[in-house]
Image (cartoon, rainbow, N blue to C red; front, side):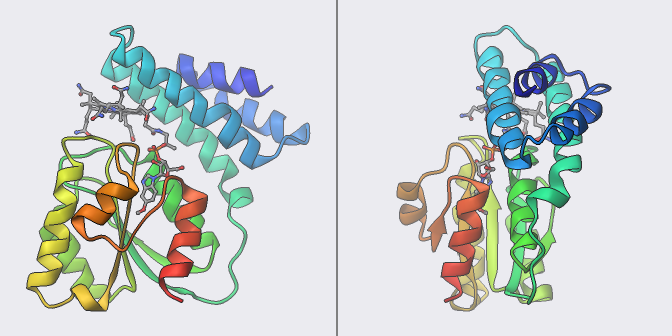
Length: 208
Ligand code: B1M
């Protein structure tokens, strides 16, 4: 079943994925297993095929839409209902970057852990992050980047916060496939997380 879901994402069978996901759940396969053992590995294969020139951007997009349709069904199961509000997080994908699946998973898990999440979407500029920081007064700003060419916008956001005198009032956490702990240290972010589950743990620890 997991393999069927994986193949459906790779093939971009957006019309079948909801039914397959429901069938897997009905068979007792856990939502996290569907995410970790079928959906995410499928996107890795899609990325590898793109890299080898065996796949074009529109095909990558249709696979992404297929994964999203499955995640929409898994969402209530992945999110354990949080009880008390833990804090507020403003999150977005940085300027020039359209990738939002991972960022939305992180947002979803944070919500599930009881955080109030303001999701700014994709291609969020430093000015927009700053505006949201002033408007919402968050405890944490979370930035996601999937491209080596866009992760370089992360320090711009940190600089904008510094210049506005807000850097000491908000924690900054970053993530996304090309991002590392080393990069977080280099740009002066407060933390880095490699996946959605550790992003939630990190957010909690940043507020302790
Ligand atoms: Co793009 N793409 N893409 N793409 N794409 C990658 C990232 C790439 C690695 C593919 C490849 O070449 N192998 C490559 C980047 C190379 C690089 O810079 N190193 C690439 C490229 C080159 C491009 C374009 C430039 C292609 C082109 O147009 N020539 C273009 C750029 C567009 C733009 O952004 N301006 C592009 C476009 C696209 C689509 C639009 C077609 C589509 C995105 C659709 C969407 O997101 N709505 C797409 C996709 C789907 C991918 C791959 C295949 C999958 C990404 C994904 O969703 N992964 C990707 C290859 C890959 O990563 N395997 C690829 C699943 C997701 C759950 O994982 O996003 O890593 P991830 O998120 C994880 C962690 O990273 C972490 O937690 C998440 C959940 O566990 N995390 C955080 C993420 N954000 C976090 C924030 C945190 C903490 C943790 O704190 C705040």
